[in-house]
Amino acid sequence: MEPNKEKCDRISRGKVSCGAQKGKTMIQSWMMTIIFSTFILVFYVGVYGFVLRRLAHEAQPIRLKLAEFGEVMLTQETFNPVQRQYITWCLDHAFSPWPMIVATFFMPFLAIKLIVFGVGKPSFYDDSRLTRLTGLFLLSTFVANPIFGLMYGLELLVLGIILLLRGGVPMVLRMAASSVIVESKSWSRTVRQHV
Image (cartoon, rainbow, N blue to C red; front, side, top):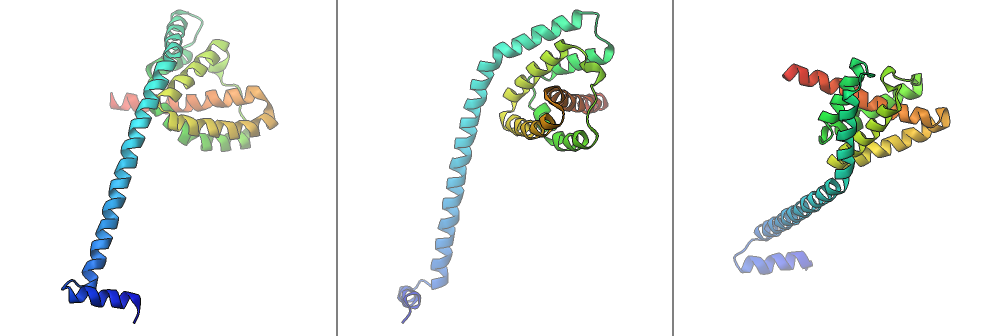
């Protein structure tokens, strides 16, 4: 006699059918899966929350420097209205997780555009102060959303290697600034529609 058949015969003599035993085992398996998944989710959320808090604490001096630097830039008369709008947008969204998400999803399209057509120097990017502001802004938004920040960083790394071979370091910096401007314009348009 086969082992499974013998087991089912033994169970059936005890007035429990073999199908009921399989159902009970399947339910136990599902319950263990749900409990294990819940444990993993709670652990992930706890660790992620701790990492976000630690990163925010460590990035506080950078964020204060960004706020101070941006406010000083806004008081200066040397910037045109587009540059002022960009500075204001960076200051308004320095703590938001959304710019990293938007930049991560726009980067592949921007990469195709940059590889096919190349990139010229944007008119708002003529000042080294805006370069510094963009760097501080990217660090601040990375801290607000480290998962998408890492994805964005990897995209920049891959595309940066390609562009470095093609156009050097200035092209990589212009590409990073271009992705921030793309999200800045689309986000500003969305905000104006909802206000």
